Image 1: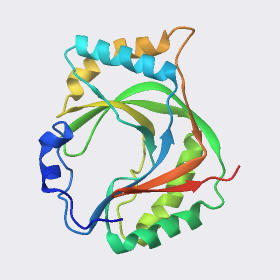
Image 2: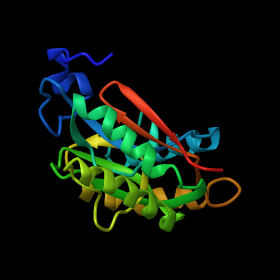
Image 3: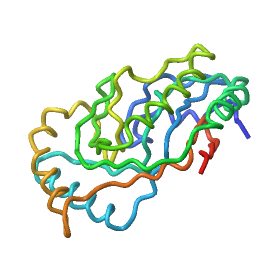
Length: 214
């Protein structure tokens, strides 16, 4: 279930669309992060196509995310034998957290710390307090295992698309035009509605689900 080694080809950035790994893969180490999944509707996909086209017209070639989510942790490196106790700690901590709905509608540009990837994201405009409470629970588990906690003043968002390298300046030059597409979308401003009914933890090739209370 947990192969100890990854295929050597996966270290080559050409196999990841030019992306570069933030940390080197080592035997028994697993990239791990906690998130809320977003299941897009057709309206979202149509808008995303418009955004990618407009960004391309500005000289920024964006690749849509393969899946969409809102991160509640940094990506950390987890040893294989920590997987079970860490996920159990998360399950225990989240047992009393309730479901809620948050929404997003403002586009923002993000760049990772290594300046190897730039993202177009949609920032949360409601549900911030509830998301912070979830982060506090996740952070407690991360601290328990001496892993990095989440950012101090997080900008909660759903990443829509990405490109290789630091394209922050170029993307910010066209962000107003992209936001106009969001604000004038068909019957009014598009609002991304994210129903937070469960958290997920992806570690290596396995995903754990943590339902929130109704």
